[in-house]
Length: 139
Image (cartoon, rainbow, N blue to C red; front, side, top):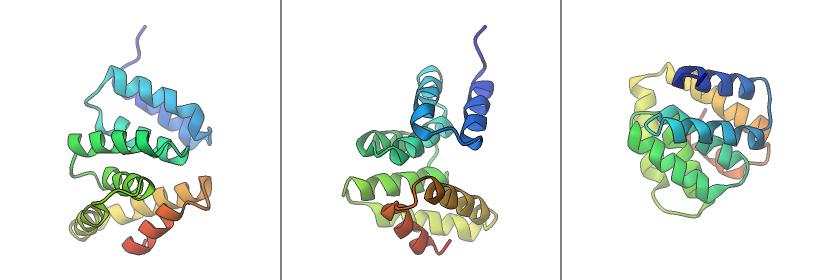
């Protein structure tokens, strides 16, 4: 029996929340995006995991797909900003500005982004790119 898109995603997210190592979850999210290539949340999560595992080029590719699928997702834009910083690519400022504007329009997102940033720094305390983004967003 094949699991649905939602149940595959939920299962993988629950494993992440349970503290499973990022490198162990990459295959789960690769399966999700390979099976459901238009799942922007799957691409966003995959890019986050790849960045946590220092797979910067893969993270950049996945984050670009996530943003292409859902340009309004602030987490996808943060991931893309992280990947751009990690690969020393240009365009970071534009994405940070879009996230800042999204936070002005939807301030309830700030709590969610703070949780995400703190989670990233818990899993990877010396993540310089994320520390920069946290300062820029003042989260």
